[in-house]
Amino acid sequence: MKSKNGFTLVEIIAVIALIGVVLLLVVPNVVNLYKSARKSVFHDEVLSIYNNAYTTYIYRSSEGDHTKRFCLGKDTTLNKIEIEEKEDLYYDITVNQYGEILSLKVTDGIYGIDMTNQNGIKKKNIKLDNITDSFDLNCNGGTPIEPPEGLSCIITNTNRECRIFNFSYNVENGTL
Image (cartoon, rainbow, N blue to C red):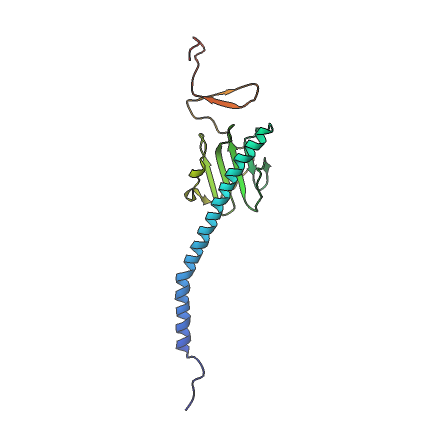
C-alpha cells in the first residue's frame, strides 16, 4: 500500500481559488481605505496652508509688507508663506487687507482644491467634498478679485489699500 505524500491537483486549485476570492474581496477595500486616508491628509495640508497664509499675512503686514498674494508653483514662486515645504504641494492664495482668504488653490499632483469667495472663505467651509482631482497651478498672472457688486472701493493715497464701504455719494448735490 502506498502512502500519500503530497497534495492532489484538485486540492491545489481549490486553495488558489479560495485565495483569489479572498483577494477580490479585500483588495478593493484596502485601496479605497488608502485613497480615503490620502485625501484626508491632503485636506489637513490645505487647512495648514490656510492657517499659515493668514498668519503670514498678519505678521508681514505688522512689519509694513501688505502683499496679498502668496503663490508657490512648479516653476515660479511669488511670496511664499511661512510653512514647511513639501514635495509636489503647490498653492496660490489671495487675501484681503484683513487677512481673510478670498481665493484658495492648492494641489499636490493627486488632489486639488480651488475655492473663491469675494466675502472670504471660512475654514469650516473647506471640506473633503470640495477636493477634486489635481490641476496645474501657475503663479504667473492671475485675475485680481473684485469687491462684491453694489459696493464701492475707495483707494486712499496714504496706504493704497482698498476699503469697501456700503454707501454711495452723489457728486451733483453732495448727498449720501
